[in-house]
Image (cartoon, rainbow, N blue to C red):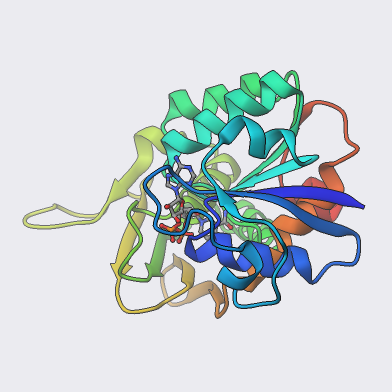
Length: 266
Ligand code: NAD
């Protein structure tokens, strides 16, 4: 039995993660964290997630919550994720991180932490996106520079970072496959007199609205034909199930930085 703590338990993903962990026979939710001003402190985590009581009150004591479980699962914001990581390292606990919008410096801190504890870090925990990344790599390698590449993503109105972590991950995979550096070839949105499209760029377009859980399309536009590889998430449970699967997988792994391809054995 693997015990998990849910960091950001009252969030959209936090509640789905509680449900997904409860649904597994090999897992139990040992603790749940929110920030110290949260109106949900003291509320039972199971009830908050719309299920049966778990006898786990939402707490704001980071050290206590990390100590209570084998693996911490964190889908919050960059700053709380860094605080969680420091505590996990201090206590020698495994972590699953789904937070997006991290800076390069924050990503480097995850790489550092993974030298002493096992960490699964993925911009997208769905099986479908993990497979899509493989398809993109194959398509980009085959099509090469003759096809213009654009990444189009859509998310709900509450999302705070753009482009999505998944879109950026797709961009990294595409840039690697095409022998380009994403930092210098990415174009984020277009406006005004942009001039003609530079063939070596990778474009990103962001749509925000309503309750869209997460749509990503990569367009390869050639002369006379277009290929579109699309993934659409219709439920947050797809990310939550992947993340709890990652938590069950990582519990007995040595220190290291892992992603969903490791968890799925791809
Ligand atoms: P949300 O705003 O609904 O939830 C975040 C929760 O974190 C909130 O309940 C907030 O109160 C809590 N929080 C903030 N500071 C905290 C602190 N110091 N300690 C404890 N809890 C704290 O957001 P969301 O839609 O659930 O998304 C959360 C993150 O997960 C975002 O970065 C999002 O992009 C990412 N995400 C990743 C995936 C993936 O598969 N990797 C999928 C969906 C969302």
